[in-house]
Length: 564
Image: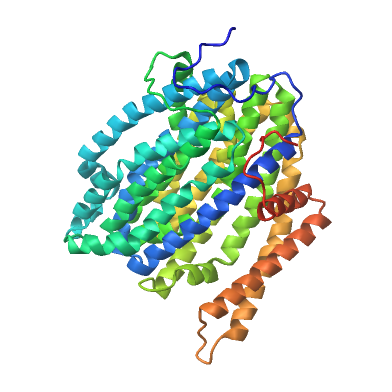
């Protein structure tokens, strides 16, 4: 098929696209190298995110207004994960890569401009609709807020302020997909830092202004979130310009590439929705438990997202372009190898991180959050939620890796079915666990539902790609559970002994003692994990260590995701 004419606003292509018939590089090296660059930037973003959460905890603790903000922010973020960084990315990236491989950069850039233009129209209208329907949405997600004077009204106000965030972050997700497909990983992964920085600055500048205007101070954080979303999109335009991309207004709903994206997007919106719908269900039920549980769950979920974003999402985002290129070549061996390498690395890192979070939850939360208005009772409550969420870390990460693979293969029914089953399981578990377990039972239900989702996707994908079953994933998981179990016990024991030795006469410990104990526990756990992993001949030990070395050793921001 001859190349399509260049987009009027596109710059000349700076290089030829990769030859779709060229040999595929080793899939393990592909994903590890790409994930290393993204992990470096994501690490910065997650650290900034932790500082943002510390700012929240210090200024507002866990109570009426933090519950209100979390529900208000959850509404556009739920749509963001469905239409932007979830289903939209999963539909756009394979389509963009297919055009890039077959026709070159200019047609691919034209498709990108069409997609961005259509998003401005569709998501812009959706944002306006969300602003108008904010009272109804808040009433749906948090019906109990109406019982507290002013709580529902402030939640509605913050929801309206933050709804334009959805458009900015949706555009940012597309620019991230373009840059990742072109081999640029650092810039899009570091962009969320600007969202976090905007909210941190807002905490100490806009919040006092909100008070002066007669609103609760936390309303200033809503304004900071909206501004941060705009910054997250804007900072990616610079590297895109350097790649030769020129923004152009091309709202063509009849574009063949756009039609392909829509075909994948509609069922994909359901297919990748399980995690966020599960969290939304937990939010609805948590609001019925009084002031605090929504915030405890949110703080815990944010901490669980540190390893999820640092490794799980990074591996998934690095896998999708490589898998999409193999799918475009109809290279089933390459597809199986890429996914197997990703799953083995995902299993090793996330099982270890899951058990480490559970073992060190209490001192970790005490060190990070227990300042200002965040009390010791908040620490204990958040730690219980974190331990429950930690159990789902592997499931959440595997869904991030496997869900987009089905869309790259052009299949949509399986992720939809898996998501619907997971949502049903989550609702049933939440209702069953709410009374005996309280708020942390909601986190446990979400974790178990994510495991069900991941298992369904994996079992079906093994039938689609038989080579996936011969890659030793089961052995990696079993060996990792053994090694990580030993490491977690060692970490918890070491932290407990150090805390006990540093405790004052009244049995209390300060931030310094907690930090020392946490560092000692983490160090002991990491050492035991490496030793046990090597004794069990886990190749993922070296892959993970190499990934960390590249990240901390100055991994280049540029580079092909297919570089060996």
